[in-house]
Amino acid sequence: MERSRPDSGIASRITSGITPGIALWNTLKNISEVHFTAKSSKGEAGWNGRGKGEVVAVPDDKTIIFSETGKCTTRAGAELAFSNRYRWRLNEEQNSIQLEHLRYGADNPVQLIELVATGKRQWNTVTPHICNQDSYTLALTHADKKVRMVWKVVGPRKNECIRYHYR
Image (cartoon, rainbow, N blue to C red):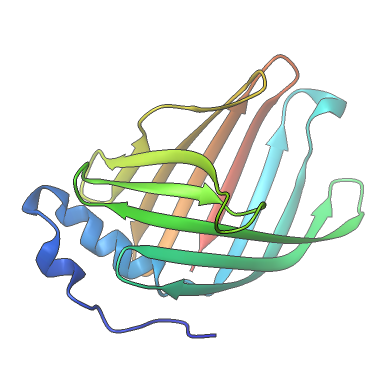
């Protein structure tokens, strides 16, 4: 799989209002690994652990597909394999970036969140993603070819914080 392509004019088409998006987009399309830590304060209902894996990023003009594979170790010591496919989507009209999960395939994505720049290298959720009774929000920062994401998941049985470090 191809890991990155030359910028095919995306920077010239993005409005000056999304200048932070150029830097984030260029960082995302060169990501190759992920590390994460999950912590829950809801006891048995949540999960705690650490994981790491490989990311294959396949960019085109307005999307980047992340294919992630790796291993997660729970606090109890169990080792679990994981795999995920995400699609990042540039929305020039809204000056935002959307994140979709492709668990049901590219033609049936699960819309997770939309991010807008709240600073030069800071992005935050526009509206929380609601799944059943749980609310998901995301804060993202990027610098030095790294992306850090903090997911907060809150619901009747969940109070989780999942920290992702991509590079």
